Length: 194
Ligand SMILES: [Mg+2]
Image (tube, rainbow, N blue to C red; front, side, top):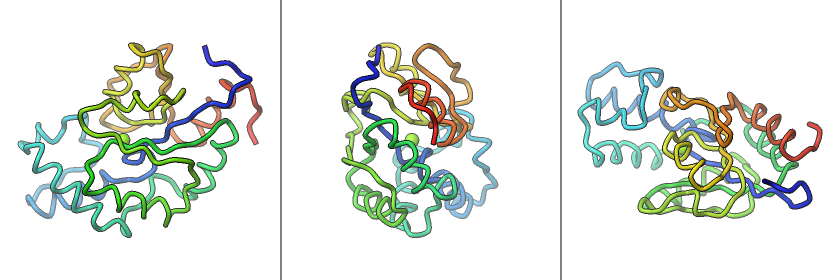
């Protein structure tokens, strides 16, 4: 149970929640491999393996799009204001699973987008984000969603094609936008929406 008296610690993911990385990933993939993939066709977390790519090939494109971070669009317009609205329900940290080579770009991107946050947690590939010690995670990963009940953490699962197979449960609530996440946080924290 999350007590209403204590400030919630909220973890916000970057890729697929704040940054529309996969849109750009798809564009670079299509240019590189002469394909016509759309993000709506990415029906699973490991969609890249279904495309015949190795993890390394997936990662190479991912690194490339983050090197071009100034052209990486946010998932939603007015992302800065929407994150600020979430912060009325608790302390916002950014918790992102990524390799070191794109960490600096991610930080610059957050700054360019004026995303307000406390700390940036870079979680290495061999750990789970849920080790970061937050109460609530806003994330698009179906893997995080499957781990949530085990460690009794609440996930607001940001709607994406690659997590559509995940069902809501006591720990997992699907949200279609950051404002939708604000509505859920409002009911959890017992504070009315702005
Ligand atoms: Mg993500």
